[in-house]
Length: 111
Length: 116
Picture 1 (cartoon, one colour):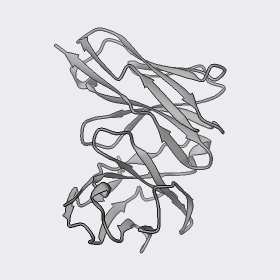
Picture 2: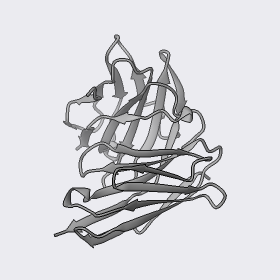
Picture 3: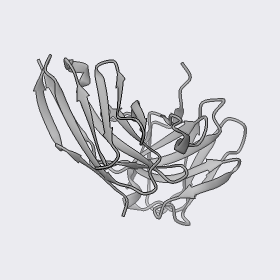
Picture 4: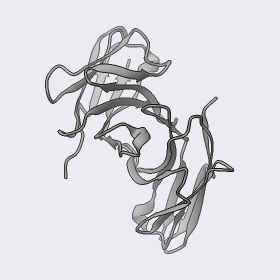
């Protein structure tokens, strides 16, 4: 069964600190892996997209890594800001046009 | 910057009623999608649509659901006879090309459907 598992479920950090979120997936076929940011009550916004041949991709203070052999990905956030408080969702594209979503990590950045 | 828009932002309906959720995808996009997110749960794929027909659908997308692109700009999701468990946030998305080729899917702000 296609699944995307994320950890931790929630995380609290202080403003300015770094954090790393984890994603494990069992999706076949695999096309690409995406990380989205979702503010409460809003639609997801894409942060990065990686194919199986890409190990790392950055978008500003966000850096995603992918290990296609172990089917693991991480999202590292550097120098966190209050506006980073949101859910971060790992999403795997499997098959033609279907996105398979993880449950997300809810990040709270405190001053 | 172009964006996906959805109306209404919140819809309240009684069980058994039909609802139509509306979306205006980004104008040069060819692929359209509906997702739902039950409160506190993960986003779930419902259906993808290309060239005026469904290209893929999930087990959730049963006979009570239908999609349509009635004109050149709107993309709609109809729920024929709503149930309490249809209460959720419904997101529309669009992409320039199919997501297997790493194209972005752009999401709308969502319609919160409440079935009473």
